[in-house]
Amino acid sequence: MPRIITIDPGKSKCGLVLADISEKKVYQAIILKSELLENYVRNVIAAEDISKIIIGNGTTSREIKEKLYFLKKEIITFEEKNTTYRAKARYFELFPISGLKFLIPREVFILNKNLDAISALIILEDYCKNKFTLNQNIDFKTWLK
Image (cartoon, rainbow, N blue to C red):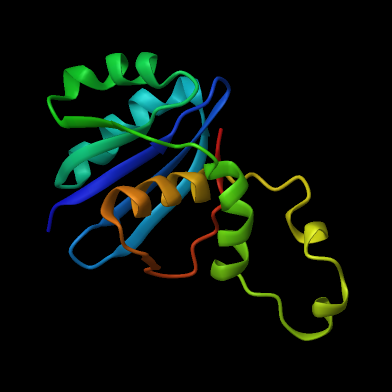
């Protein structure tokens, strides 16, 4: 089944999500240094049937689109306004607080968290107008350095 890559671009790091649109499932969600993005996407395309790449229209989106153009895949630039802010709320939908942790303010749990992969998920969900589920216990804070 064809899959889609969504990227939340940034100057120093990017969030990336690999998902299946027909199943509405996320198979991979990572954060990686921006300079590693091109090779990482190339490797994913070699291993997966990727139908398109969606890039948030924020920081460095134009540069990333130009770098990935040679892959000969459909590349779409899509609105990413407020995705980082919205990622904080989506974080708790994906990873609900349980037990005695309810007594601690929610902000403590996302302090210094890297939400770039969740921002990429939100870009995907906005593009598809659907919520996606996780295929397995994906750690959205996984760094590829």
